[in-house]
Amino acid sequence: MPTPVAGTTLTVVGGDARPGLSGVSSDALVAWFAERGEPAYRARQVADAVWRGDATTAADIQTLPAALREGLDEAFRFDTVGDTELRLSDGGLTEKGLHRLADGALIESVLMHYPARPGQRERHTLCISSQAGCAVGCPFCATGELGFGRDLETAEIVDQVRHAARRLAADKKRLTNVVFMGMGEPLLNLDRVLAAVDALNDPRRFGLGARHITVSTSGVVPGIRRLTALGPQFTLAVSLHAARDALRDVLVPLNRRWPVAEVVAAAREHAAATGRRVTYEATMIAGINDTELDAQAMADLLRGDHAHVNLIPMNPVAHTPWTASPDPVIEVFAATLAAAGVTATIRRNRGQEIGAACGQLAAERAGEPAPAVVARRRARLVDESAHALRGERSHEPAPAGIGE
Ligand code: SAH
Ligand code: SF4
Image (cartoon, rainbow, N blue to C red; front, side, top):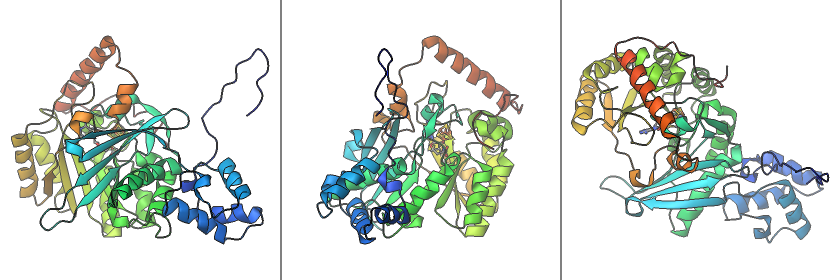
């Protein structure tokens, strides 16, 4: 650390500059040892300790000479999400993790346990974050309300998974699924997300099959096309929420840049090229996107596609004037989709009482906005959705900072 000049205050920007070890490729680690005149098997020793063992500092790797351990500690961070607060709900079936990163940014991951049922083995699914905050700004989402903080580095994404896997291992359990449905828009941090998926997927590192990894996007069309060109990497989920542009402009502001028909066309090409079914998500909001007209529009949009729709009652988290659609309304919506040959599942949210919805705990830490700000936000949403329900498109620009 530089020595502060007398009379000035030293500001350290960005926290810890050392890269997280779990985001470093095997080749880069071999190269690091080679620079120190060490053989490649040293990299294997470290990788084994990180991925198979439970090393969270270099001191945990006793088979390495002390000087190398020190060197490793100076060059890399063994754990980027170590500072974690856990909250349990649903009788212990849901574990919400709030991770404080080196620069103070807060992100969340949620571990959900699904006990075995007839015909289905037990599952342990982790929902992870790809960014601190999010630039897309969907009004029903607590992360969207926070705004954009920063992209996560590869290791910060992977270490959420290692953290949960260590907790499960202590109970002799294994993580079975990872979903990128926490904070952030994964396709706006795609290089790091792909590197993280690579580490999770690699049998010599985390070793989780690609079929057990799902990445959800709000509809970043260039990102979907890039994935299509790469071939099957994981299951793609697309947050649809509405099939009509006027309404989707409000619910997913990214729609002003990439309208719903383009998003679905890109998802369709992805399904055709990879042979994988696309999953669509729709957060169901009473009186906003759950009407018969919306169900019919969605059915028309997806008719004949190799697709599946998950209908999720809105978690009442953000400062909106809205509430979840009642179950019978969602059932009618699902029936309209089914009549058009589009399969749909109603998915109940987990962990509502601890705020398991995307970004809610971090939003809570950010502090309650002033009542006047909340009132203005509500009034704007009432106004915007009233226009949208009349079919009028938004004149607002697409959110800033969403790339190309
Ligand atoms: N940014 C990506 C992935 C993270 S959000 C995306 O939007 O797809 C993951 C999912 O959580 C999305 O489908 C999103 O619409 C949903 N979600 C966000 N806030 C919600 C809420 N209050 N109730 C229900 N689902 C919500
Ligand atoms: Fe971002 Fe997804 Fe939340 Fe929309 S729903 S604000 S894209 S995290």
